Image (tube, rainbow, N blue to C red; front, side):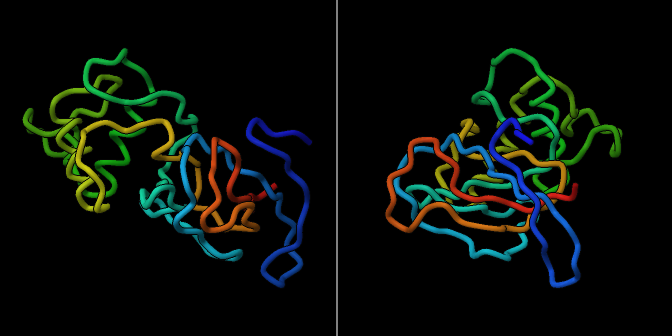
Length: 171
């Protein structure tokens, strides 16, 4: 069947006879491929799927696709709450609902100065320029960690939004 971001087909994996679907991941990053995973690699939340122009494209947890740049004063949306939840889960902010402190991050649909500060701390930890802005090509949201099934690019390839990896997903 056809998926929103690529073709899925059935594959056997992990030597156990388990059947998984292979799905091409969408990619919005543009530039030169500077790092790639290997087929079989397990990518956890908060880690790089690949890198374009030495900037990692990070896997984050979420069911909504990354469809716009997230920055201060953008329109509210559930994608903002999804990013804020990841910033808390990865340790770059404390959830106000847990701490009860108004000075901590409220996970909602609104980008606040504290959201921007948390994004900057996360970006610094990745070794990239700390802008407080998350571009569409910086992250890929998925509901589960992924296992790389195949790589569709080589180091040095110029990419303009085409898929770089396929992952295994449970049917």
